[in-house]
Length: 238
Ligand SMILES: [Zn+2]
Image (cartoon, rainbow, N blue to C red):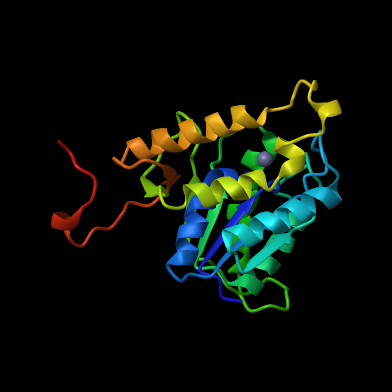
């Protein structure tokens, strides 16, 4: 399929919340984008897998991605096991993404940090020529990590000011998560929609502020950035 960017995360809605704006922006720049959800989010307190699948498809349409798939890993049991790594390697070989976006490798939720390791190791495996899979060996060129939550290190921030409203609509497409029925509103884990809105706004604004724009999404890459023209470097210093 030759995707330009594939964003991979543990649960449907993780990608929208961490790098949705960047995917929308890449699409506008003419790139072919995609999302791979490792699980169907079936352990979530609210919403059935069926509703969540419908919501994920709606969000994918809003983001304008060319592909959205689910790897079928059991929710709450994301592990970098051989079986899951091989399944992921096959998908990577089929989609052939140049850039892969992964969750940051430290997180509160075990699925999130395991998704990071599983993602990296699956991409590595996909490039091994001797691996007994039908598809042609392929390894992505670049791996980026989403670091949108406070206190995480970043190497660059993408300006998503123009994409922020569309990203917000994609996140709110997950009605079962953020707009639950009245009977469910007293549950402890329920995040009120206005609270979610305020939190999304605050995080994106903080990250945007780091580069002098309204809204941003931060990323980390393990390699150093190579720069050709030091005169055209963006972001004002003083
Ligand atoms: Zn998640």
